[in-house]
Length: 186
Image 1 (cartoon, rainbow, N blue to C red):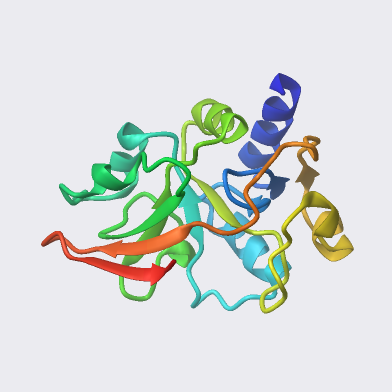
Image 2: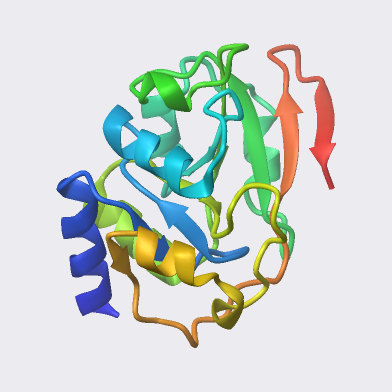
């Protein structure tokens, strides 16, 4: 796995895109602070950049680099066993402008996946994580279901196809500054 972390890290540092296993589904990723890399992901997915993408961070310390004011309730959602949760935060910072939602929000998850954790630690920054499919097509539930277009469109495919991911995307919630929780996707 160390070799795969190193190669993925090098690709991200060079502004490239990767296909990699996450704690949910296989994802397309890039450096979340690089607008050109983020644009490559939108183009590969054939998705409008008005539809924001999710980011991954290693832990709460890294999260603080990208969100101005983390709501007090946020840590309650970080470690719910078996339930990956992406949280939409107000006030993103230090991210590519084309990654931030038009309502000045960003969706971020702390993944429960060894490969992701190692890569995020080595990269020391947020990584985009969007499902490995063309926009509007079904989300692949295994590596074998990822289309040739996606496989050929990324700069590096992490060679861990046996890595087990869950077969569905994370739940998404919006956490307001006042502690209000709004469920966006179950």
